[in-house]
Length: 322
Image (tube, rainbow, N blue to C red; front, side, top):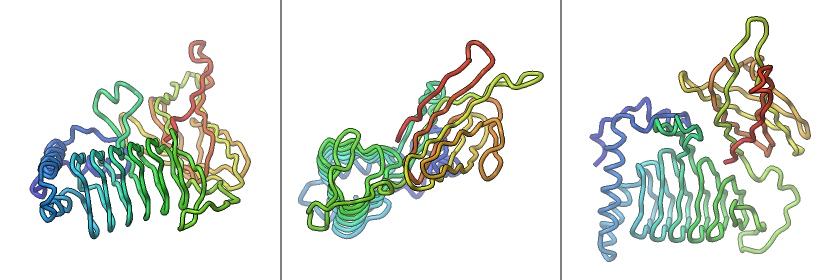
């Protein structure tokens, strides 16, 4: 049904790589319409026509294991970015916003009215109104149960053997073998394969990748003799593990760049962004930019500016935590 659609693969690949892309790219509306038509057909297929329901699920999703069971009123943005393992079950009213991959392992059970959202929109209203966005994948392991009404935001990884309590909003990674709940969702207790509570001594590395977004950076212009000011990124690592922070720099008028910053265990480092920093001696030119930080361990990050101009003397901004 969708193989014949001609779409802008360059812009679509930006989306799949987590780069800023414009949602008006050629062919997007046709891809979304095709997914909506499949959803509509599935939702009105009689419950006793199990053969046709499975055919439609396999046509809608990108990959499907054995014994899929999806209740009606399902919605997908593209559909082909949703991949499910064996014995997948989704109760009624589930929503998969999938400009990036949404991957489920085996034996995943999803309660009613759950949403999995990979799309992230700019805080900058001008970019948002021009229909730019990012997309970050969601990954779910094996043997995971979501209670009703859960929400999972872009970029989250959920481990295996996990229970997510009803109504939870999952804003960061969840480790294996636990019960987690709340808004934001957090680990309530760790469990074994039989659901019994176990003690876990070191939880500092259980959370996996962390993502922070600074949406409104603006490098000041340079004066005749010296810079008007500079912006700096301060990273605090409170764990016993060295932090490796991948920084993606997004611009409005050029392709993204990346750098890697390292902060030792229980250390604080301040990186001036108008000086060469990181492994590749990268520095940000003047103009507007946004930062996406991905760290292997929890960090505290602040973007600040010192400026000789009175109106811009000093400000600081906390990252938007994903």
